[in-house]
Length: 227
Image (cartoon, rainbow, N blue to C red; front, side):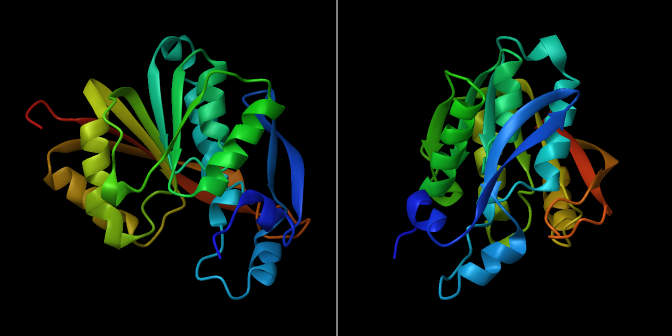
């Protein structure tokens, strides 16, 4: 069965939460917990993880706030948008945003969250990295937790390469997946420059009231002069 946002809502509990991004609050509709998602999605090949608000997305959203006025008028592509929080931040700061995901239910949720936050003008692209059709180029490409699947590393690199304007940059946040070093090494070998740092944030999806922390890496990526 093809999953839609409506059919998923019939089987999984959602919640609307207020997310503090650099002292500004965003309203995000998201699956309640990862455990609830796993419990209710028995029989499907792949649970719709993109409907969860992940720590990497919150850290990315905060990082984008630091860009401030430099985002005004900039073109931004969000890959694997899921709930859409980072793209919403960019749009709120005046960027022209395209949010992309391979699942229609994620696009639907991102659109709903734009409406909840009274943000208009975002465009949406339903697309698979292996059969990427979007030809536009962007000043900034962003994504949260994109490197988990080694089988699409080359496809992701191709999408980024063809989507970034000359002089553009990429910002990706990652929860230190074991597959991430292989992807970063592939980019470095291909001539990209990578600057990384680590932020600590509270865990969202453990389903408990205890406050625990998780390390999230922030990767700033740009083409080298010869790439």
